[in-house]
Image 1 (cartoon, helix red, strand yellow):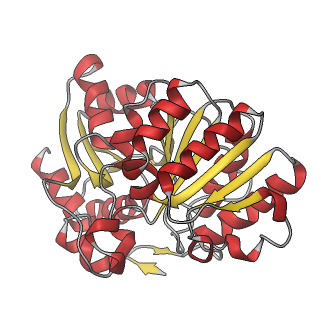
Image 2 (cartoon, rainbow, N blue to C red):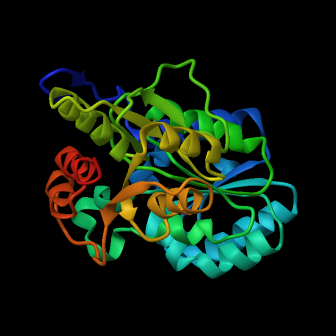
Length: 318
Protein backbone atom coordinates (compact mmCIF):
# COMPACT_ATOMS: atom_id res chain seq x y z
CA UNK A 1 0.00 0.00 0.00
CA UNK A 2 1.23 3.49 -0.90
CA UNK A 3 -0.34 6.46 0.88
CA UNK A 4 -0.36 10.11 -0.12
CA UNK A 5 -2.22 12.84 1.70
CA UNK A 6 -5.18 12.47 -0.64
CA UNK A 7 -5.22 8.86 -1.86
CA UNK A 8 -4.17 5.29 -1.12
CA UNK A 9 -2.65 3.19 -3.91
CA UNK A 10 -3.09 -0.54 -3.30
CA UNK A 11 -0.70 -3.21 -4.54
CA UNK A 12 -1.89 -5.98 -6.87
CA UNK A 13 -3.08 -9.20 -5.28
CA UNK A 14 -0.73 -11.16 -7.54
CA UNK A 15 2.97 -10.74 -8.24
CA UNK A 16 3.96 -9.97 -11.81
CA UNK A 17 5.93 -13.23 -12.04
CA UNK A 18 2.87 -15.17 -10.93
CA UNK A 19 0.83 -13.46 -13.63
CA UNK A 20 3.51 -14.37 -16.18
CA UNK A 21 3.54 -18.04 -15.16
CA UNK A 22 -0.24 -18.43 -14.97
CA UNK A 23 -0.82 -16.69 -18.30
CA UNK A 24 1.91 -18.72 -19.96
CA UNK A 25 0.29 -21.91 -18.65
CA UNK A 26 -3.04 -20.80 -20.07
CA UNK A 27 -1.53 -20.03 -23.47
CA UNK A 28 0.42 -23.28 -23.65
CA UNK A 29 -2.55 -25.43 -22.64
CA UNK A 30 -4.71 -23.78 -25.30
CA UNK A 31 -2.06 -23.82 -28.04
CA UNK A 32 0.50 -26.63 -28.41
CA UNK A 33 2.67 -24.32 -30.55
CA UNK A 34 3.44 -22.05 -27.57
CA UNK A 35 6.88 -22.95 -26.22
CA UNK A 36 8.45 -21.21 -23.20
CA UNK A 37 12.22 -20.91 -22.87
CA UNK A 38 14.05 -20.11 -19.63
CA UNK A 39 17.70 -19.40 -18.87
CA UNK A 40 17.83 -21.18 -15.50
CA UNK A 41 15.49 -18.64 -13.89
CA UNK A 42 12.38 -20.76 -13.56
CA UNK A 43 12.11 -20.29 -9.80
CA UNK A 44 12.75 -16.55 -10.17
CA UNK A 45 9.80 -16.12 -12.57
CA UNK A 46 7.59 -18.89 -11.07
CA UNK A 47 7.53 -21.12 -14.16
CA UNK A 48 8.96 -23.93 -12.01
CA UNK A 49 5.43 -24.25 -10.65
CA UNK A 50 3.89 -25.00 -14.05
CA UNK A 51 6.47 -27.21 -15.78
CA UNK A 52 4.72 -30.40 -14.66
CA UNK A 53 1.57 -29.26 -16.44
CA UNK A 54 3.26 -28.46 -19.77
CA UNK A 55 6.44 -30.60 -19.73
CA UNK A 56 6.91 -30.59 -23.50
CA UNK A 57 6.38 -26.86 -23.83
CA UNK A 58 8.79 -25.44 -21.25
CA UNK A 59 12.53 -25.68 -21.88
CA UNK A 60 15.26 -24.71 -19.43
CA UNK A 61 18.12 -23.64 -21.71
CA UNK A 62 20.57 -23.08 -18.87
CA UNK A 63 22.60 -19.92 -18.37
CA UNK A 64 23.18 -19.55 -22.11
CA UNK A 65 20.97 -16.67 -23.18
CA UNK A 66 22.45 -16.18 -26.65
CA UNK A 67 22.00 -19.87 -27.39
CA UNK A 68 18.46 -19.70 -26.00
CA UNK A 69 17.63 -16.92 -28.47
CA UNK A 70 19.00 -19.05 -31.29
CA UNK A 71 16.86 -21.97 -30.16
CA UNK A 72 13.84 -19.65 -30.13
CA UNK A 73 14.59 -18.64 -33.72
CA UNK A 74 14.81 -22.30 -34.72
CA UNK A 75 11.50 -23.05 -33.04
CA UNK A 76 9.90 -20.07 -34.79
CA UNK A 77 11.10 -21.43 -38.15
CA UNK A 78 9.10 -24.60 -37.48
CA UNK A 79 5.91 -22.66 -36.73
CA UNK A 80 6.20 -22.62 -32.96
CA UNK A 81 5.54 -19.49 -30.89
CA UNK A 82 8.48 -19.09 -28.49
CA UNK A 83 8.19 -17.01 -25.32
CA UNK A 84 11.76 -16.25 -24.21
CA UNK A 85 12.32 -15.05 -20.64
CA UNK A 86 15.32 -13.92 -18.65
CA UNK A 87 16.29 -10.90 -16.62
CA UNK A 88 16.06 -7.83 -18.85
CA UNK A 89 19.80 -7.28 -19.30
CA UNK A 90 20.43 -10.90 -20.30
CA UNK A 91 17.57 -11.27 -22.76
CA UNK A 92 18.49 -8.01 -24.53
CA UNK A 93 22.05 -6.84 -23.85
CA UNK A 94 23.69 -10.25 -23.70
CA UNK A 95 21.64 -11.85 -26.50
CA UNK A 96 21.24 -8.77 -28.68
CA UNK A 97 23.05 -10.03 -31.76
CA UNK A 98 21.08 -13.27 -31.80
CA UNK A 99 17.84 -11.35 -31.24
CA UNK A 100 18.70 -8.89 -34.00
CA UNK A 101 20.04 -11.31 -36.64
CA UNK A 102 18.51 -14.71 -35.92
CA UNK A 103 15.16 -13.30 -34.82
CA UNK A 104 14.37 -9.90 -36.31
CA UNK A 105 16.51 -9.85 -39.46
CA UNK A 106 15.15 -13.30 -40.33
CA UNK A 107 11.63 -11.89 -39.86
CA UNK A 108 10.65 -14.52 -37.30
CA UNK A 109 7.96 -14.70 -34.63
CA UNK A 110 9.63 -14.41 -31.21
CA UNK A 111 8.19 -13.06 -27.96
CA UNK A 112 10.70 -11.78 -25.39
CA UNK A 113 10.01 -11.00 -21.74
CA UNK A 114 12.63 -9.13 -19.71
CA UNK A 115 12.07 -9.12 -15.94
CA UNK A 116 13.76 -7.41 -12.98
CA UNK A 117 13.80 -4.17 -14.94
CA UNK A 118 15.86 -1.22 -13.75
CA UNK A 119 16.06 -0.61 -10.02
CA UNK A 120 13.76 -3.54 -9.26
CA UNK A 121 16.79 -5.84 -9.75
CA UNK A 122 17.71 -4.65 -6.24
CA UNK A 123 20.36 -6.91 -4.62
CA UNK A 124 21.36 -8.52 -7.90
CA UNK A 125 23.32 -5.31 -8.38
CA UNK A 126 24.82 -3.30 -11.18
CA UNK A 127 25.59 -6.12 -13.60
CA UNK A 128 21.95 -7.23 -13.43
CA UNK A 129 20.37 -3.77 -13.54
CA UNK A 130 19.17 -3.02 -17.05
CA UNK A 131 18.79 0.68 -17.79
CA UNK A 132 19.31 0.31 -21.56
CA UNK A 133 17.12 -2.60 -22.70
CA UNK A 134 14.25 -0.51 -24.07
CA UNK A 135 16.68 1.52 -26.14
CA UNK A 136 18.31 -1.59 -27.58
CA UNK A 137 15.06 -3.21 -28.69
CA UNK A 138 13.67 0.09 -30.00
CA UNK A 139 16.58 0.07 -32.48
CA UNK A 140 15.36 -3.15 -34.10
CA UNK A 141 13.27 -2.49 -37.23
CA UNK A 142 9.58 -3.36 -36.78
CA UNK A 143 10.02 -4.57 -33.19
CA UNK A 144 7.18 -3.93 -30.74
CA UNK A 145 8.26 -2.67 -27.31
CA UNK A 146 6.13 -2.53 -24.16
CA UNK A 147 6.73 -1.70 -20.51
CA UNK A 148 3.94 -2.95 -18.26
CA UNK A 149 2.71 -1.17 -15.17
CA UNK A 150 0.48 -3.74 -13.46
CA UNK A 151 -0.53 -7.41 -13.55
CA UNK A 152 -3.73 -6.95 -15.57
CA UNK A 153 -1.78 -5.17 -18.27
CA UNK A 154 0.91 -7.87 -18.32
CA UNK A 155 -1.62 -10.68 -18.68
CA UNK A 156 -3.46 -8.86 -21.46
CA UNK A 157 -0.33 -8.14 -23.48
CA UNK A 158 1.03 -11.68 -23.09
CA UNK A 159 -2.22 -12.98 -24.61
CA UNK A 160 -2.34 -10.26 -27.24
CA UNK A 161 1.12 -10.88 -28.69
CA UNK A 162 0.47 -14.60 -29.13
CA UNK A 163 -1.78 -13.68 -32.04
CA UNK A 164 0.53 -11.03 -33.54
CA UNK A 165 3.47 -12.10 -35.67
CA UNK A 166 6.93 -10.61 -35.17
CA UNK A 167 9.34 -9.47 -32.49
CA UNK A 168 7.62 -8.36 -29.29
CA UNK A 169 9.48 -7.28 -26.15
CA UNK A 170 7.68 -6.90 -22.82
CA UNK A 171 9.59 -5.30 -19.95
CA UNK A 172 8.33 -6.07 -16.45
CA UNK A 173 9.13 -6.34 -12.78
CA UNK A 174 8.83 -9.62 -10.86
CA UNK A 175 7.12 -8.59 -7.63
CA UNK A 176 3.84 -6.79 -6.95
CA UNK A 177 3.03 -3.57 -8.74
CA UNK A 178 0.53 -0.88 -7.77
CA UNK A 179 -2.89 -1.92 -9.09
CA UNK A 180 -4.02 0.46 -11.83
CA UNK A 181 -6.51 -1.39 -14.01
CA UNK A 182 -9.59 -3.57 -13.63
CA UNK A 183 -9.93 -6.96 -15.29
CA UNK A 184 -11.91 -5.65 -18.28
CA UNK A 185 -9.30 -3.11 -19.46
CA UNK A 186 -7.84 -3.50 -22.96
CA UNK A 187 -4.46 -2.33 -24.27
CA UNK A 188 -3.84 -1.61 -27.94
CA UNK A 189 -0.44 -1.42 -29.61
CA UNK A 190 0.67 2.13 -30.30
CA UNK A 191 -1.61 3.61 -27.65
CA UNK A 192 -1.30 5.10 -24.19
CA UNK A 193 -3.80 5.33 -21.33
CA UNK A 194 -4.82 8.65 -19.80
CA UNK A 195 -5.18 7.90 -16.09
CA UNK A 196 -5.70 11.45 -14.89
CA UNK A 197 -6.74 14.66 -16.65
CA UNK A 198 -5.05 18.00 -15.99
CA UNK A 199 -4.57 21.28 -17.79
CA UNK A 200 -1.16 22.52 -16.58
CA UNK A 201 1.35 19.80 -17.41
CA UNK A 202 1.45 16.34 -18.98
CA UNK A 203 3.36 13.56 -17.21
CA UNK A 204 4.07 10.59 -19.49
CA UNK A 205 5.32 7.52 -17.65
CA UNK A 206 5.84 3.77 -17.97
CA UNK A 207 6.29 0.79 -15.66
CA UNK A 208 6.78 1.51 -11.96
CA UNK A 209 6.98 5.22 -12.71
CA UNK A 210 3.27 5.39 -13.55
CA UNK A 211 2.38 5.01 -9.87
CA UNK A 212 5.07 7.56 -8.92
CA UNK A 213 3.55 9.95 -11.46
CA UNK A 214 0.08 9.57 -9.97
CA UNK A 215 1.54 10.31 -6.54
CA UNK A 216 3.30 13.34 -8.01
CA UNK A 217 0.01 14.54 -9.51
CA UNK A 218 -1.56 14.35 -6.03
CA UNK A 219 1.27 16.45 -4.60
CA UNK A 220 1.02 18.95 -7.45
CA UNK A 221 -2.72 19.31 -7.02
CA UNK A 222 -2.16 20.33 -3.40
CA UNK A 223 -0.03 23.16 -4.80
CA UNK A 224 -2.59 24.24 -7.37
CA UNK A 225 -1.02 22.50 -10.39
CA UNK A 226 -3.24 20.11 -12.35
CA UNK A 227 -1.38 17.34 -14.13
CA UNK A 228 -2.42 14.89 -16.80
CA UNK A 229 -0.88 11.44 -16.22
CA UNK A 230 -0.46 9.06 -19.16
CA UNK A 231 0.63 5.43 -18.95
CA UNK A 232 2.66 5.03 -22.15
CA UNK A 233 2.92 1.24 -21.95
CA UNK A 234 3.45 0.97 -25.73
CA UNK A 235 6.84 2.53 -26.33
CA UNK A 236 7.19 1.29 -29.91
CA UNK A 237 4.99 2.00 -31.73
CA UNK A 238 4.23 5.04 -29.60
CA UNK A 239 1.02 7.04 -29.47
CA UNK A 240 2.08 10.13 -31.42
CA UNK A 241 -1.40 11.65 -31.54
CA UNK A 242 -1.91 11.37 -27.79
CA UNK A 243 1.50 12.92 -27.07
CA UNK A 244 0.96 15.82 -29.47
CA UNK A 245 -2.61 16.48 -28.31
CA UNK A 246 -1.67 16.78 -24.65
CA UNK A 247 1.56 18.66 -25.32
CA UNK A 248 -0.45 21.20 -27.29
CA UNK A 249 -3.01 21.37 -24.48
CA UNK A 250 -0.67 21.77 -21.51
CA UNK A 251 2.45 23.27 -23.17
CA UNK A 252 4.72 21.31 -20.82
CA UNK A 253 5.72 17.63 -20.65
CA UNK A 254 7.63 15.51 -18.12
CA UNK A 255 8.56 11.92 -18.89
CA UNK A 256 9.28 9.39 -16.14
CA UNK A 257 10.95 6.01 -16.59
CA UNK A 258 12.93 3.39 -14.67
CA UNK A 259 15.49 3.41 -17.50
CA UNK A 260 18.21 5.53 -19.02
CA UNK A 261 16.85 8.81 -20.37
CA UNK A 262 18.77 7.98 -23.56
CA UNK A 263 16.94 5.54 -25.80
CA UNK A 264 13.84 4.82 -23.74
CA UNK A 265 10.53 6.55 -23.14
CA UNK A 266 12.02 10.03 -22.72
CA UNK A 267 13.83 9.74 -26.04
CA UNK A 268 10.75 8.38 -27.81
CA UNK A 269 8.54 11.21 -26.55
CA UNK A 270 11.20 13.83 -27.34
CA UNK A 271 11.48 12.52 -30.90
CA UNK A 272 7.74 12.94 -31.39
CA UNK A 273 7.66 16.43 -29.90
CA UNK A 274 10.71 17.70 -31.78
CA UNK A 275 9.13 16.78 -35.10
CA UNK A 276 5.46 17.54 -34.45
CA UNK A 277 5.01 19.86 -31.45
CA UNK A 278 8.11 21.51 -29.93
CA UNK A 279 7.36 21.73 -26.20
CA UNK A 280 9.06 22.41 -22.89
CA UNK A 281 10.13 19.01 -21.59
CA UNK A 282 12.03 17.40 -18.72
CA UNK A 283 13.04 13.73 -18.55
CA UNK A 284 13.06 11.78 -15.29
CA UNK A 285 15.29 8.72 -15.57
CA UNK A 286 18.81 7.42 -15.11
CA UNK A 287 21.52 9.80 -16.35
CA UNK A 288 25.09 8.65 -17.08
CA UNK A 289 25.03 6.06 -14.30
CA UNK A 290 25.37 2.31 -13.90
CA UNK A 291 23.30 0.15 -11.57
CA UNK A 292 24.24 -0.83 -8.01
CA UNK A 293 23.13 -2.98 -5.09
CA UNK A 294 20.25 -1.73 -2.96
CA UNK A 295 16.55 -1.92 -2.18
CA UNK A 296 14.22 -0.43 -4.78
CA UNK A 297 13.09 2.47 -2.59
CA UNK A 298 16.69 3.48 -1.86
CA UNK A 299 17.62 3.19 -5.54
CA UNK A 300 14.64 5.28 -6.61
CA UNK A 301 15.88 8.02 -4.30
CA UNK A 302 19.48 7.67 -5.51
CA UNK A 303 18.59 7.86 -9.21
CA UNK A 304 15.92 10.55 -8.62
CA UNK A 305 12.99 8.39 -9.71
CA UNK A 306 10.48 9.47 -7.07
CA UNK A 307 7.25 11.44 -7.03
CA UNK A 308 9.12 14.36 -5.47
CA UNK A 309 11.61 14.36 -8.35
CA UNK A 310 8.74 14.52 -10.81
CA UNK A 311 7.24 17.42 -8.89
CA UNK A 312 10.58 19.27 -9.05
CA UNK A 313 10.79 18.70 -12.82
CA UNK A 314 7.25 19.99 -13.32
CA UNK A 315 8.04 23.18 -11.41
CA UNK A 316 11.12 23.76 -13.56
CA UNK A 317 9.01 24.08 -16.69
CA UNK A 318 5.91 25.80 -15.28
